[in-house]
Image 1 (cartoon, rainbow, N blue to C red):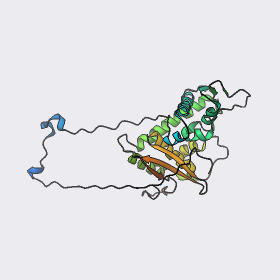
Image 2 (image 1 turned 30 degrees about the horizontal axis):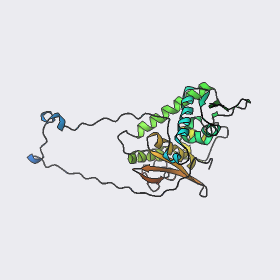
Image 3 (image 1 turned 90 degrees about the vertical axis):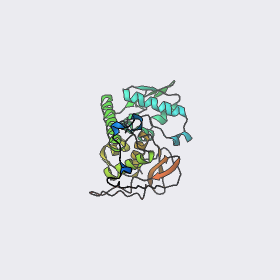
Length: 273
């Protein structure tokens, strides 16, 4: 494992089923004759509402965090996200403890991966990082480069969720569609450039390569962006990580690592879904 995750959660459950039926209408049988829609009352015609494009909102959160963190911490972290998207140098923060948590690489890696390892609270210039409700933001790369990077990340996430998920999907359908996306587009890969300054989750998202920690974090992040409630779970004894997601009030464990498709393979294995 390259890093520890924000939370460890425990839950076990997996059920899914479905069915379909088709019937053929006998030709010429008046009992099955369909009237001309133009002759029917307007309120009797079923209209199909087109899917609205999904909008990427970086202000994600999981209810699993509420067990450890209150609404104030969520709000202050979102203040940091807003400040970063504007290229600001400070953000409102009520305490040094929360400031340290907000600017931690683990927190950023899970909740705003584009800023992980390129934004820090400590600049090394001797200036106080936090004072009187205001936290400093220090960029390890030129600010204009960070803003370019942030806009590109936003576009990539937006493109992915709109290519994979429809707004009309149920939570289960979103979960399955994103799972198929991960298994079809990502590669399990230990190799990592020694000179990278990118956060692991961000780098994996951009290159489509990583190990269990990154894969689970990306899948969890996309679930959260699509409105599902999810979190990463880590088992240190197994040295493995996966995602935990809530669907219709039930908790499910989903592992995006072990079902990655081999080159040319089309079948999606659901053993770990």
